[in-house]
Image (cartoon, rainbow, N blue to C red; front, side, top):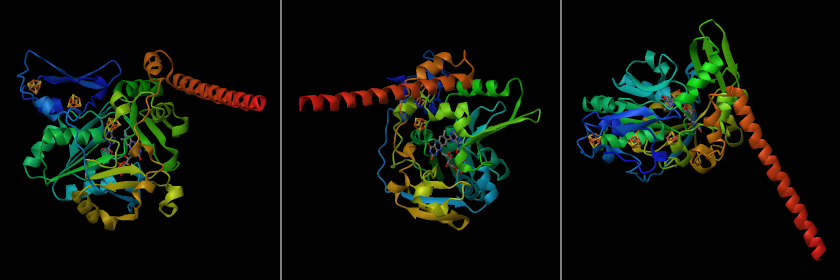
Amino acid sequence: MIKIARKEECTGCHGCYNVCPKKCIDMNFDEEGFLYPSVDSDKCLECGLCEKVCPIIHIVEVENDPIAIGCYNKDEKIRMESSSGGIFTLISELVIQSGGVVFGAEFDENYNVRHSYVDNMEDLQKFRGSKYVQSTIGNSYYDVKKFLEQGRQVLFSGTPCQIAGLKRYLRKDYDNLICQDIVCHGVPSTYVWEHYKKFIANGRRISGVKFRDKSTGWKTYSLQIDFDDGSSYNDIGNENSYIKGFVKDFYLRPSCYECKYKTLHRESDITLADFWGIEANEPELDDNKGTSLIFINSDKGRITFEDIKKDIVFKILDIKKAITHNPSACKVSLYNKKRLSFYRKYKKIKFDLLIDNLMKESMKKKIIIYTNNKKSMFKRVLAKLILK
Ligand SMILES: Cc1cc2nc3c(=O)[nH]c(=O)nc-3n(C[C@H](O)[C@H](O)[C@H](O)COP(=O)(O)OP(=O)(O)OC[C@H]3O[C@@H](n4cnc5c(N)ncnc54)[C@H](O)[C@@H]3O)c2cc1C
Ligand code: SF4
Ligand code: SF4
Ligand code: SF4
């Protein structure tokens, strides 16, 4: 029966949940709104399968030589609907054309995020675009295996910890599986997202959400929310309280602060990211409509890239240089000491006020540290002069 020594390590990948032959593992929300497994010990067979598939118990070290590429989809419409360069859609189209199935993250009817699958071009649009909330895997790993064993090609798109969960669950390599992950900053909780939706809707019903609306450009990181009365909210990331709190790491899943998947040596075949720092690195690939930075991590990734090459504008890059402005590629998000305070207060204080207050407090602290440093510098210089 699965026992996690430290709760903070569990990524909520659902591997244990999918593998349990007795269906005696439930995934339940904790008080912060993240899912964790809990076992009904009366039904448990003590078969040990849940421990066998857990990616935090069985960590895999990958040895590979990834290639970095800056690129974007030549189809401007798809590109504008996607978060960065629209590369996910191109890979998905290949798989669907071959009669395969694509797994990704979609909004459910309440605009919470979950994994599901599609096998036709029209439905692909629901996976397009980043959703900055943890996606619930549900029975997806079980479904992936079912399709693989039927001989259908499968593309599974998810966070690196979800890819690790799937790979441990499958316990063997399948030639007909392509895994695509993202450079992942971390994931906020469902409860915080639900709370924010209520705050911004203010009694209206949400009819659409786009975390990366590009109407003011790719780099503005705009959140667009539509309501059923025809009104809508749209603001750039720097002005939006949910995005500000996300980027400041106030409400990421605890496992994100000690993520084991921030590396250039990944288990996926292809990694997708925003090409941040493009102005300095490759300005000719930048028209502010979205450019992806992708890593080709395996032979399957190389074959897939060869197949999409004719549909993209691209340039092969020096990987170390390409990630200089993309810390999430290799660096773990730092635990923000204000996180506790956020979770204690977020249901009591207006969302935007709380975020602004927490950010102001951090700024005040920085100024105090800066002035203290200045003061001690001044004292040190003074002491040196006196001693002379
Ligand atoms: C939570 C999160 C954090 C990210 N952090 C960074 C970062 O720090 N730096 C960076 O460069 N890029 C980051 N990305 C990746 C980036 O935002 C784009 O997703 C990526 O560049 C792919 O863009 P695209 O235009 O090719 O495809 P898009 O059409 O934008 O495709 C999005 C793909 O992401 C998947 N996806 C969307 N939301 C989720 C989710 N919640 N969980 C799992 N999969 C999801 C979809 O299923 C789809 O496959 C992050 C994405 C997410 C979801
Ligand atoms: S030990 Fe076996 S039966 Fe018990 S929870 Fe784990 S997978 Fe399920
Ligand atoms: S398999 Fe995944 S969800 Fe289950 S305990 Fe391990 S990390 Fe957590
Ligand atoms: S930061 Fe790491 S642990 Fe958190 S969702 Fe991303 S891959 Fe998973």
